[in-house]
Length: 116
Ligand code: HEC
Image (tube, rainbow, N blue to C red; front, top):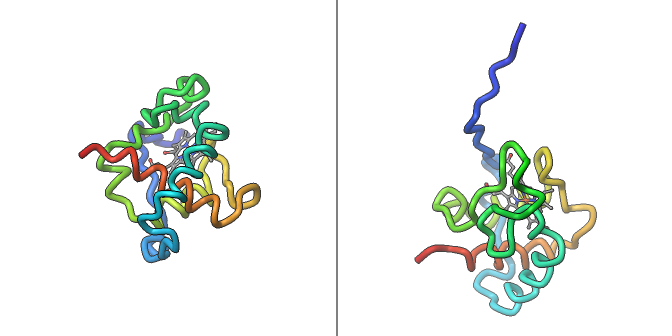
């Protein structure tokens, strides 16, 4: 017996996550703090520029996505926050190790990868 594993397995946050309101919406200072956290904790997989090309991300399946893609940026702040909090597979949950404030700072920083 075998299970079908979809190559393009798409990670979707639960519906209720969409509605979580970002208390730091548009706050640039929070985004700057998020950058500092990101360059410490996240870049190894996500890459220094958020392209998903970090040294530890290369061998992962699924790989981290380029944060600039619409499929990432079209998600609400609440969905990104939920994913950082709860994780999936090699993307560990950060709700135990980072405060809510720190997780929102990371969301604000990820917004800065939006390709305009
Ligand atoms: C050990 C490698 C690793 C580290 C470290 C890591 N991530 Fe991830 N991350 C992943 C992988 C792999 C995925 C894709 C998971 C999937 O789609 O199944 C992911 C997905 C995500 C997503 C969802 C993007 C999407 O495709 O919807 C966000 C947001 C995210 N990571 C943020 C972070 C933040 C913030 C940190 C640091 C606090 C971090 N990650 C640290 C591996 C990592």
